[in-house]
Image (cartoon, rainbow, N blue to C red; front, side, top):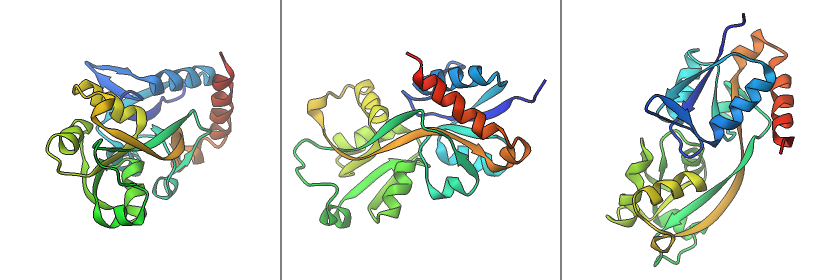
Length: 215
């Protein structure tokens, strides 16, 4: 029997998470379906964030990770799959802050934050925003923005941060959002794994297409 595919799963609810020893989230459900189509044995490995996932990939301890959006740093080590879904990146701000977070003046003056190792944090640095912090856990961010006023905006995936805001008792009237960009979400598979399994990526992409077509 083939060795299981080792996939890191960052704590990124509601897409992927592990609670009480159980993996859950829409990303888990989708990848389960894809790997079932492939008839591929696999193993999920919980990691706290995307920075750890990339570090584990670099050390050869995993074969890939998900759900992820594409960036140049990840592309050096791994190959990005067909997208499984579209992920909206939003700015979250206090409701009385009417500034445009996409403006040059906001970029120069505002203190913003995202999640450590996430593609949103990479994007902020690449586009020269004043990144005050990269939180190691998402639960750190709502109080800094909405209670302590320590930061001017949080930049994160829509579903991820909205869920955390709801869990902490905030409602949509407590903040406002501005959409920056929509990004495909998929899997990254290490180039080392592909070198040993040269047909895997094409098979994976076909399986993703098949799952996405199912009702």
